[in-house]
Each structure stands twice: as structure tokens, then as C-alpha cells.
Image (cartoon, rainbow, N blue to C red; front, side, top):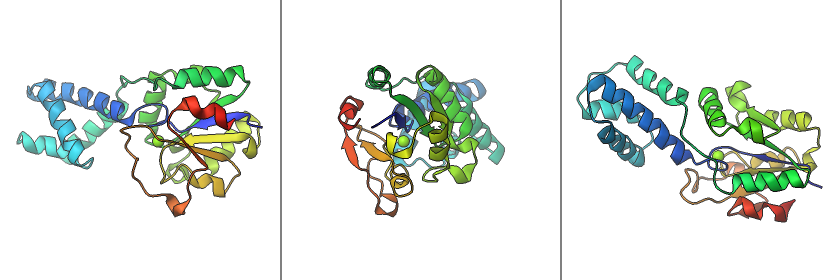
Amino acid sequence: MVKAVVFDLDDTLISEKEYIRSGYHHIARIIEDRFSIDKNQVFDDLMGFFNVSSLNVFDRLYDKYQIEYSKEMILDLVKEYRGHFPNIQFYGDVLPCLTELKKLGIKAGIITDGHKIAQRQKLKAVQADEYFDEIIVTDELGRDYWKPHPKAFELIREKLKISFDEMVYVGDNPEKDFYIKTICPIKTLRIMRQEIVHFSKIYYQSIEEDFRIKSLEEIRGYL
Ligand SMILES: [Mg+2]
């Protein structure tokens, strides 16, 4: 019997692309203030660079405008990006799913990797505390405890006072979200959303999810 559903955050509950757009809008405003370059142009540049490669986007921006820059200037933009309060929302199927879980007496949790400041800002922006019983940001435990390390799953199992075989984990990333089933008897669901970042990644240790869903509306079939 399922007693808790635990979710990944990025591209499971919120859109990573929407977050990236929000972060680049923030950076574009800073660049406009500091260098008097039109923020809409800067935003388009950042998205264009990102769509080619997610690496060194800010370096390439400074290069384009022939602005001399230091490592500190790049780190400052990274800090601004991670620290900004993002303009993001849950995917449309999230709150109806949580309402249904609540009706059934099933608890809800989040386990998320990613930089701890950025992840906390995302969680605050969608008021996740109001909707979830327990939230674990693995980066707060230490970089070594990012998924697929089992520590966060052990912690949330304790906090939710359930056993692993009463837990379902919903994630999107083949590189880290489903390997847990080889360590703990958790049922894993892969959500296949459109236009997500990790759609074509390779399964860690070739371990695949138990089931695939296209929307959280399908979750009731796995409870
Ligand atoms: Mg994810």
C-alpha cells in the first residue's frame, strides 16, 4: 500500500527551462544597469548561447560585447543567477495531483539535487512548504549526497514514518532518479514531459524506472 509519493523538483514539478528564462531575465536587467545594453537584447543573447551549449554562457555574453571580464565577474553573475527569486510556477497537473493525494491520505515529499541556494529559492517561489510534508535539498547534506546516493531517501522515509515499499518516487532524469530502486524497494515512475532538459540522457548503470507516465494525472494508477 502506498503511503507517500516523493517527487523530484526540476522538470518534474517545475520547468527547468522556465527557471532558466527567469534567471536570464534577472541577469539581463543587471547587464543593462551596468553596461547600458538593452536587456531584451541581452536576454535573447543568453537564450541563444544556452541553446547552443549550457557551458560558459556569461563568458560568451561578455565576449560578444567586448567587455573585459575577470573570473570574479563571472562568479558574481552565477551568484546573482542562483540567488534570484524566480518567476516560476508548478506545472498545471501538480496541485490537482497533490489535492488527490491528500484526499487519499497519502503524504507528499520532494527530494531535489542542485545548488542549495537556487533550489531553496525555487521552492520558496512556488510556496512548496505549503503543499509538501517533507522537502530535502540534497546539496544541504553535502555534494556527495546528491542522487543517486540513498541518504536523502533514508532521511525522508524516517521523517514520513513509512517503509520503502510504501513509497513511490517520481522523477525525470535517467542519470540519477531511478537507480535508487536497486538500493531500496521504492517504486519509481518516470515522468516524460515535453521539452525537458534530460529527455535523452543515458540510464545510470542501465537501471530503468518501473513505469512511465506522461502527466501526474496518471499517478492514481500506481497508488
Ligand atoms: Mg529533474
